Amino acid sequence: MTMVDPAVPRPVTVHIDPAFVVAPVRRRTFGSFVEHMGRCVYTGLYEPDHPTADERGLRRDVLDLVREQGVSVVRYPGGNFVSGYRWEDGVGPRDQRPTRLDPAWHSIETNAFGLDEFVSWARSAGVEPMLAVNLGTRGPREAMDLLEYANHPGGTQLSDLRRAHGRQAPYDIRMWCLGNEMDGPWQLGHQTADEYGRRAAETARGMRMIDPDLELVVCGSSGPAMPTFAAWEATVLEHTYDQVDYVSAHLYFEEQDGDLTSFLASSVEMDRFIGDIVATCDHVRAKTRSGKRMQISFDEWNVWYMRRFLAEGVPTEWVRAPSLSEDDYTVADAVVVGSSLITLLRNSDRVTAACQAQLVNTIAAIRAEPLGPAWRQTIFYPFAYTARHARGTVLRVECGSGPVVETARYGEVPLLDVVATHDDDADQLVIFAVNRGQRESLVLDIDLRAFPGYRVVEQCVLTDPDVRAANTSAQPDRVRPQTLPGPAVDQGRLSVMLPSVSWTMVRLATSG
Ligand code: AHR
Image 1 (cartoon, helix red, strand yellow):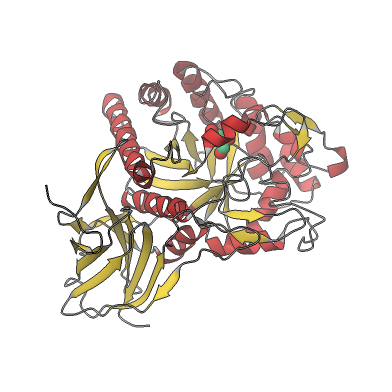
Image 2: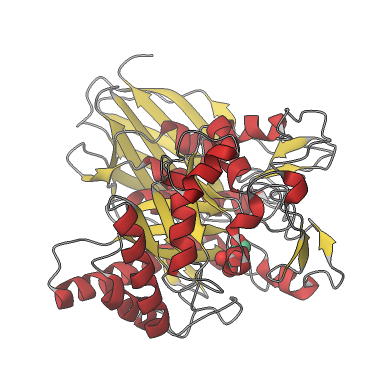
């Protein structure tokens, strides 16, 4: 057995070539999710009494952070919430909107914020709205009504209702989710795969009769651990293959029982999950003789300390906007988020949309105190840098044999996780890399001979001697990426040091 000296950095040879194309970088990879859950909407996006609130009651400090994060598309209004939601409650004059019980999160829903406010917020944030319809307690009729209200120009009862609410132009929402996690026993109106497959197919057919060009997402399993996983996808897709464009995937990570080694390798699970979904989709494609390749909408993913949430439970009293799952994210969590984004990019040939869950306060990269400040959690940074700089095409990175770590959950896993993007028009190459190791640094020896004239213009690293360090309202900037002097490219080779438990971005260009 070879003893490893953690003081000696471990070398890994890496080859990058513009010919190793995976797929275009999809802007929708950098999506997020706003659910009526906890304080995501109320005192997150919307807080009329906040000092930064605009005339619509939207928090400007939060809007600024959302723009800085580079979020491209936002899924709304749930989540579990949507399966008991009546969209009509959230439109029209506020003083006439009903206050109701939200059974999903055991909360009082005032409906002060609904579809019209969400679309208005999305326009200000510069994000594409993506809507989920209720297929738990409702069906095709209500989904078609919502589509008519949102997207039809005018001259019908529901489109004229939108206009009467002061929204003349149709919302032109392109991406629609056909329910949420309909396999989950916790979901209002959850169904068997056959029941849901039929309902989703009929809803999709009705919606397409109104607008054939919509992009529709059918629910996959709620996660790879579901006992029905894969059989659910196969059955649901056999009912819906011709009617939908995407199947959804959801996955949350957390450190379990102090096993940081496995936790840092969480994106391995994401990668395997994507592979299994692709295999299932392609099986149905072959069976149905379809010419269409199903895409994956990975529309819920993040680090979520769900065990803590389940142990605490939802409030026993019915209250408005309770604090739920306001996880304080650490450096280790940011590294897991960084490598999740690397995984999503590497699978861009099939994963063409993804939403980090959620956006503000609840399981979120942005935190905002009621009447107080808003700040960036650690996980904000890998997201913001990747969203800003991943452009052009995704390149597969070929690695020589590098060090591995034995994990209890995933077996042997490489310490290095890496992907690159290449923007041919801007002559820009960006390398995103994670070192999952807790002891040793890695040194990437990068072969860049296929990129003559490129030099490093920026190198950023997120790491900390304390992997549990987090940002809080008292110390909102405790953890931030550091900018390092970029190493020189020497005869087509670049050497980059990756500290233990770190996320790194290296940006190269021919100018700038
Ligand atoms: O994002 C929190 C919850 O996680 C969502 O409401 C649900 O879809 C998932 O189980």
